[in-house]
Length: 155
Image 1 (cartoon, one colour):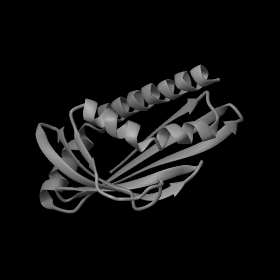
Image 2 (cartoon, one colour; image 1 turned 90 degrees about the vertical axis):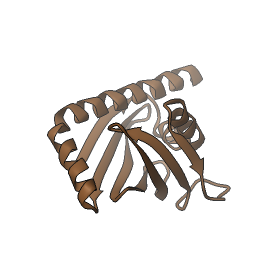
Image 3 (tube, one colour; image 1 turned 90 degrees about the horizontal axis):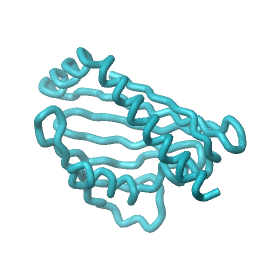
Image 4 (cartoon, rainbow, N blue to C red; image 1 turned 180 degrees about the vertical axis):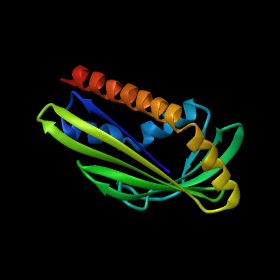
C-alpha cells in the first residue's frame, strides 16, 4: 500500500533538506506527540546506518518499531525503513529545487505486510485510504508551512 503527499515550500533546497534531516528535532516532535524514541547507533555524522527504536500508539494499540536510515543524499532527499509487528514500511523524502527560493517536497510511504495480522491492518487501512491520504496531505502541508516560516525568519 502506497501513500504520496507533496507540497511546494518557499525556501531554498539546502534549507529544506537541513530541516527534513534534523533528526534530533524530529525525535523531540515525536516524543511531544507521545512516542518513545531512542537512538540506537553511535554515528557522529548523519548518514546511512542511523537507527532508532520507537514505541507509539496506532489504531488503539501500542506498537514498537525499529527505524533505520538507509539513504542520505543531500540535498536531494533521504530514505528510511521501519519494521514493526510483521509490517515493513519504507518512507522517503524527495526534494526538487523549483527555483533558488522554492522547493518541492514529496513524501512517499509504502507499507508491506509480512504476517497475517499485518495484512489485516493494511486491509483496514485500505478501506480508509481516502481519509488517511487527506490527513497525510494536511500534515505535510502544515510541516511545509512551518519550514517556510522558519526560512522567512532566518532570511
